[in-house]
Image (cartoon, rainbow, N blue to C red; front, top):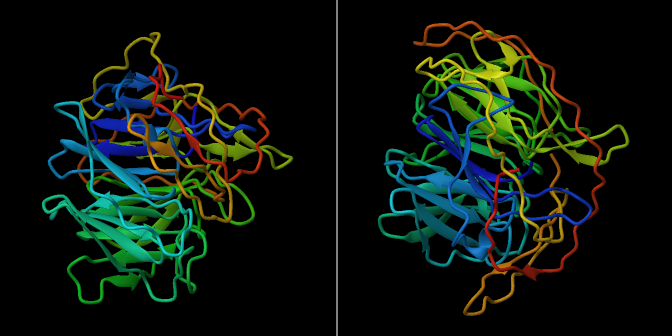
Length: 414
């Protein structure tokens, strides 16, 4: 189990997760790289994980607080670590299983450690990372390999939009940005239109609106007809609530809650919303990791369930011994926290790359309400199984020590 791993869903067929932290007293950074099969049905007690690779993973990817984007042809995953300095990016070719380091990214000025989310415009293949360049948005054109910066909404500063969520919406043909810490003004829900002369717009919505959550997730469902916001935190607490936005009417509904968590992995395939990993807190406010098992919310029955039912309706196979993402033993100081601070990475040697240290970045969540799929035939929801309460694990504040680590293979994602 890990928190703040990088993740991406490819064509609703495969969920990829990489890296993450155990959020222990000496936070361990993982370089694990796993895939969850979304083309077959499975029970949450035996999810269909497989290891993508355990060799040749770049040393800088033994980390957390990073993100992944996918090319529009679904053949290239790009990993973005703009939390540590110097920022770092690398491609992984899914067909050839080869790594390709990208050109150097611009240094943030001033230096801040901020959790940022990358997303791809499928109409142009351009990648956008809000706040990925201090108070500006980092952009990357894979055709020309040109890195650039663009303005964020007015009033922001280098620490704004920390741990926001950012996703492409195929119905509106725009990006949607939600939440984050230190958002300027009263709005925390924006639309970004790449081709517009005034690309940023603060959105107005109705219904049961979610609070300004940071460290949660926002993912599209039904080809962008719905947007799902789950988890995260407010300044006061970690949330387990789930909210669903009907994009046509811009109306929110709330679904049933799950265990509070932040820094988790999220995905949608067919009628299933899936979350895995993350960190929560106990009654004393200590951070604790959650169960190894993914959790599944059925969008038709509007219930949390123990079964993931694939779009092709293949019956759930009997439980088998399937590896779950688990960490390696490399220790890296730091933990997810609150206020970011500058962190410089050492210059890599000929045989290793630097792994900078982690700093704090807070977060919360919410959940509840049935929705109707635009085209899919409803399916019967399986019976609900309560989610096991997290175990207590103390967490300590991060330090600014930087550790350079050689990549070592992992066995299973945590």
